[in-house]
Length: 130
Image (cartoon, rainbow, N blue to C red; front, side, top):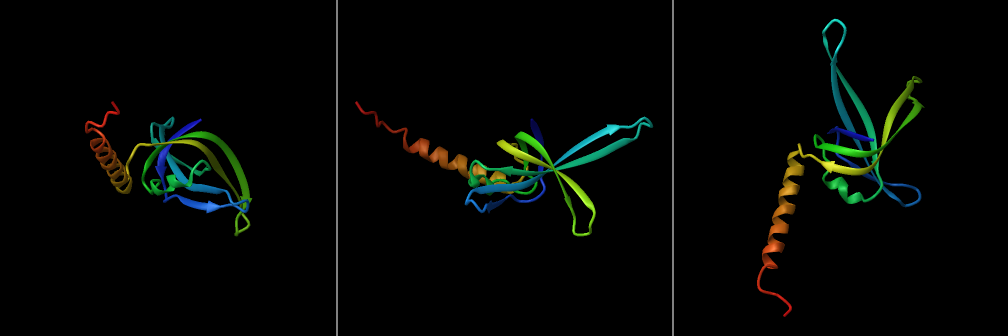
């Protein structure tokens, strides 16, 4: 399944009791439709996301960044501190595609592109092995 939305907070890296690192973040997905009366209804769905592949991705997953995620959805239910029943959606992320949208992300991407350009420029001299 794929979802596209914006991060509602910066990603956090946590370590489990088995010493595995997981990146946790939250994504909001906005949808709108018109009801029978013709009124536009705005609806936002929130997903709590986890990513287990590498913790380094947390550096670029910042609040406001637009991301496209691939993975699977699961539900969870719990009782809140106030005694009320609660439910939420979890998204177990297997792939992350950045679509930008955050100044911090744009800065990191520009820095990475500049570093790649410098590496390419240094390697373009006549260094053929023959």
